[in-house]
Image 1 (cartoon, helix red, strand yellow):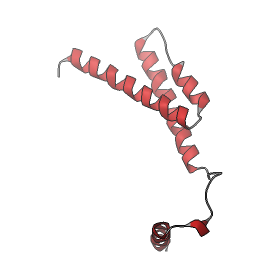
Image 2 (tube, rainbow, N blue to C red):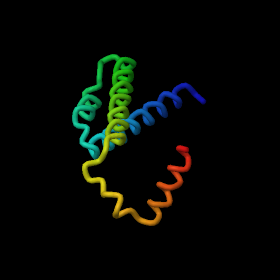
Image 3 (cartoon, one colour):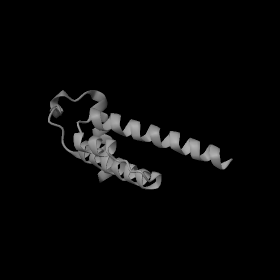
Image 4 (cartoon, rainbow, N blue to C red):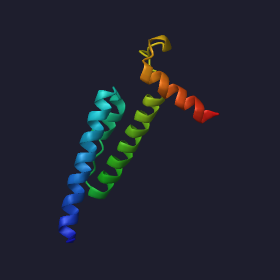
Length: 96
């Protein structure tokens, strides 16, 4: 691949990654991480890229924490569907 093409494609990919990360953060109310990502810039392109990658990593770690946290809107197990019951039984079997 020609070096110029590689640079262009890398820049486009990085922009897509940053945009997707911002959208995910906004939907999950991770305001601090979204702001940090938006502010990750520098005159030096390499430093800006590093700061952006660090901000994306922070945002993704916050997403993992949020997904691991118990939900306030979780429904009780008595409203469990037959499919949920089957999945839960399968999980229990794996733990044994």
